[in-house]
Image 1: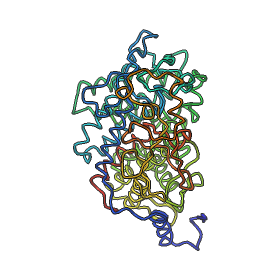
Image 2: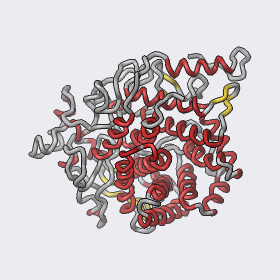
Image 3: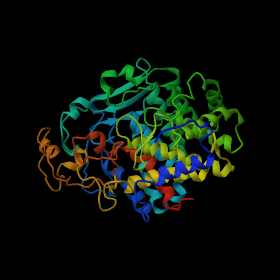
Image 4: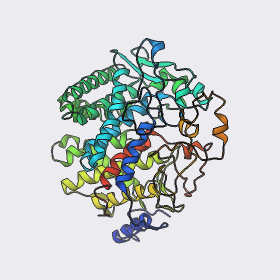
Amino acid sequence: MARKSLTSPEISPATLSLVLLVVLLSSSAIHAGHDYRDALRKSIMFFEGQRSGKLPPDQRLRWRRDSALRDGSSAGVDLSGGYYDAGDNVKFGFPMAFTTTMLSWSVIDFGRTMGPELKNAVGAVRWGTDYLLKATAIPGVVFVQVGDAYSDHNCWERPEDMDTLRSVYKIDRAHPGSDVAGETAAALAAASIVFRKRDPAYSRLLLDRATRVFAFANRYRGAYSSSLYHVVCPFYCDFNGYQDELLWGAAWLHKASRKRVYREFIVKNEVVLRAGDTINEFGWDNKHAGINVLISKEVLMGKAEYFESFKQNADEFICSILPGISHPQVQYSRGGLLVKTGGSNMQHVTSLSFLLLAYSNYLSHARKVVPCGELTASPSLLRQVAKRQVDYILGDNPLGMSYMVGYGQRFPRRIHHRGSSVPSVSAHPARIGCKEGSRYFLSPNPNPNLLVGAVVGGPNVTDAFPDSRPYFVQSEPTTYINAPLVGLLGYFSTHSSWR
């Protein structure tokens, strides 16, 4: 679709609205209705498939077993637990912390609509925070990775058989990492809100630790990909700088603690830490849009006029991703999928849609709209855009394929995931070594173990999708794709109408 200037006299507000809705609703038949409650249940179950460490008795994905029980022993610490980030067996602290933050935000904003799945969502948060507490137990140190990515990626083996290097990597005063430390502080602070009434003692522990980790991140500034370049790059290299994570951590600490020191930090550092940068980005590496939406809630509630510039940034973000008027960096496929450059496109779809939905709720409560040139974007419109993306994921797309494993009749069967693609311990008790697993990677057969709820990287801008393990950009699931989706599905499981 050709983009015209919003100030062009050729385009009326009514025409713009029509363009938006045509893009939203065209090119694929709208599904008669999705079972969002079932999708929510499965999206949370996925995290159980990603668990590392000793599995609990109520583990629902039974083909998984205990793994990596000695993680951290080489450094004299216990770093068992946590999540494998994607289809490999490395524990990367940066995306794990972001995943935990987004699971927490999902519960905070949409937990009341999750019904019986709320308990499982809270459990998914706690599996992340229990690990992050271990990783931050030593003052002035944050353990940020367990496992050597090069060694791990050279093998195709289930986590239960791992014999690759379980090297432990950390940041400290001499080797700073304000990005991963700032995100870890955000995760701990956000989770403290989740547990405030459910487990007050645990909540206080999380908030106290978040305070300490943030102070460390702020005092010893630097990017962890500078300190640990050969370890974390190109896997989870911080391409965007650490400044946004400091603001992000402060924003969550302000929300969790209500302490003036964090409000003053945000106001004082807004320009220095570039709050308005890259407004249409949000993910494990770039927090800018999330910062602006999170902080704007207070402005919209009439409680924080000193944060007004963050609301202006949030409004610009909203306008930058709406179909028909979006920024050149944001495209929509013919089938209606939001597409951004870079790997694993579904991470952009779920994260940006989450912000649209969260902001639509904040606007609704404040009875506000977003002015986008001649167009007025209502909360209802933002919800429609977010719902269209969720429906695309669940099967309303040109291929008629659900991109969530186990949901619907047609979904990816050959996902890029070691544990899912290699026979389980119960089916094949004998060890499967590093290179022995290659035949399963190269096999044209479907994966023997369903990683229920996993959402893969997804189709490209032409709506094409190769259901093939080697195409990892499109066929690999990640925790940070699913974490925002939990909140979206929680909302739509109760509010499934378009308006």
